Image (cartoon, rainbow, N blue to C red; front, side, top):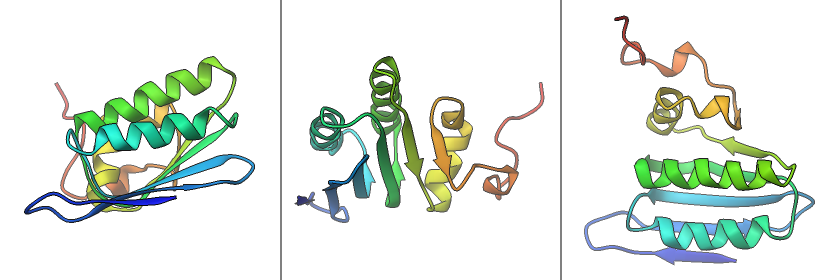
Amino acid sequence: MLRELERPGAEKSAIAVVWSRSRTVTLRGELDAETVLEAERAVRAAERTCDDLVLDLSDLTFLDSAGLNLIFDTAHRVRDRGGRVTVRATHRLVRRVLRMMFVDELVDVEPALTAADDRDGPTVLPL
């Protein structure tokens, strides 16, 4: 299943669900308030049929609070059922947001988040 989402003035966003032993939901483009409902439908459909879920954000170029909430809510639902969520992210800006919000304390992030993801300076400033 691959569905293209278009908004005037924005790059295309797409959602794909790969059916395997654990389910992989691939999100492309932007995950924000305008695209999160479609993404949530795909994620919920995938999580109903598996224990473990992979959110592949490798082709995601933008992630806002709506997208973060989707990750957090999904992780809580899946963990409550005894499963686990893995987030794959390679885009520099997406990884920086994930690190700033300590997403790796709730889900597995591949590749693992490190200080190298703070290329533009420290994520957490000293008090």
